[in-house]
Image (cartoon, rainbow, N blue to C red; front, side, top):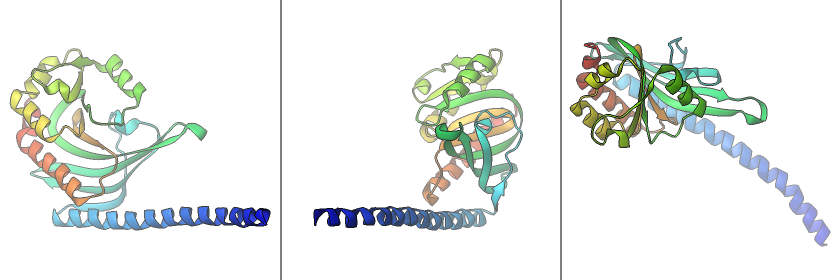
Amino acid sequence: MMCMETNIIGGFVPIFVFILILSSIVLGIVLNIRRKKMLKKFALEHGYNYLSYGNIESIPSLYLDVGHSREAKHVITGDLESNLIKFFDFHSIIGYGKHKRRVSFSVCEIDTRSNLRRFLLLSKKMRFAPGNMYEGFKNGFGREIKLEGDFHKYFKLYVPEDYEIEVFQIFTPDIMATFIDNARDFTFEFVDNKVLIYRTGLVHSREKLEKTHNLVSLLNKNFIPKLSRI
C-alpha cells in the first residue's frame, strides 16, 4: 500500500514541476508585455521614439564590451534640450558552458558637445562589477582618486594619470552634491562625446524610469554644459 502511494506521489512530481515551469514562462511573457507597454507609453508621452531592438555602438565602453552575445533591447531615443539621449536594456553572457551567466542592466546614453578622456565614476551601491574589468581599468587607464568631502563614501572615481586637473574642474562642490543627492544608485562612464549611465538590473516601474529621466534632465542642465568647456 505504501509502495503504491509512493508511486502515485512520484508520478505527480514531474507534473508539478512541469506546471511550475510553464507558469513561470507564462508569467515572464505577461510581465514582458506589460513592461513593453509601459516603455512605449513613456516614450510617447515624452516625444521619444521606441524600438524593440537596437545596435550596440562601437564606442570604447568598458561596460558595453563585457561578455559575449551582447544585445540592446527596448531602445528609447530622443532629444532632450538639443542633446541626443538613449535609454536601453543591455544583455550579455559572461563565460561559457556550465559557468556562463547572463548579465542585464539599464543604460542611458547622453551625447554631449565634448571630447572627454575615458574615466569612470563607480557607485558603491552598484552590484554589477566584473572584477577583471575594474582591475583592467585601474591598471590600464588610471587610478582611483578621492575628491573632497564625503564624495568618496558614495563613489569611486578612476581617472587617467594626466587627467586629474580636468576632473577636479568637472566635479566642483555643487556638482558633487548633485551626484550624492540624486545619483548614488548609478555608475557613470565618460568617454569621447558620451556620458553613459548604468543601473543594476532592468527598470520595471514607471516610477524608476521617471527617476532616471529626471536625473538625466538635471544633469543636462547643470552638469553636461560643464563638460563642453573642458
